[in-house]
Length: 380
Image (cartoon, rainbow, N blue to C red; front, side, top):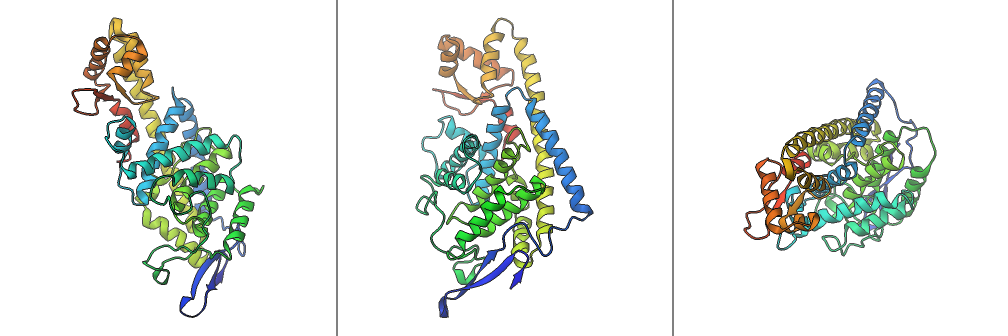
């Protein structure tokens, strides 16, 4: 079967025969992308809301930490799509040292956070490329499920999606014979100078990456991270604050149907419209989160400024919560160079004001948390 998105190719002989799908090089031809009124409207709306998100994110007192917390929320959701059970709360507790033993599920989320931070930092020295994608995959798979499935390396054997065997698979990506050329075409399109809207281009790149499925494991998470990295590299957003995993998790079947529509019928247009709708909804939600944080900070600072002689120390502790939303009496004592008793009374006062709350019920080494801040990002 041949259509504008690619063709099915026979692999093997006899009982070992199967058909893999080999995507055609991007952009689509015969015909090219069809821009109807709906798509043009969605492109305009997506760009409008991304611009609004960029403006609001830049106005935050600590935009770098908004980015980091948002990435943690994305890491949790993106991992949950792949079957991880750990929650956002589990991740925060593990980072605060509350968990005696870090569950493997939490380690998967932590690896995603590491890969995200690494990716955005690496863009300053290496353009988005197959090399960077392999580096990210190596970080994502280190020490967790999939660690024995060639972390950081493109697959050297056939994989498939759905079903218990290749015979019952719902989709079979390119065979090893075709994988190198598919990846080469993918990277050429990634770097190609053209007049495509960045949002249209990343919609196409994401779908192509998932159809190629170049790794034995972790393709979904890397493919979703690719979206944020591409938009950051293209300067669409000053801060990497657009992550689609929540939208995809909410509309998981529609997401898969959109990708299947490309490989089965060459229907890029329906997929692009779904993707743009996700960009709009995600941007709107991120703007709400950012504005919620700004209002929350204004209210909490008013409470702190009314505390009298302890307000200076309270403000120092409070501002630090935007870099690390959990704190112990020992940490506050060291940061402010005050006694443990004074530190304890200060944190208790912040609890009374409704700013901090106990993360655990421990009598020793209590961990306090800026829960309202975490709740703004919570993916649970």
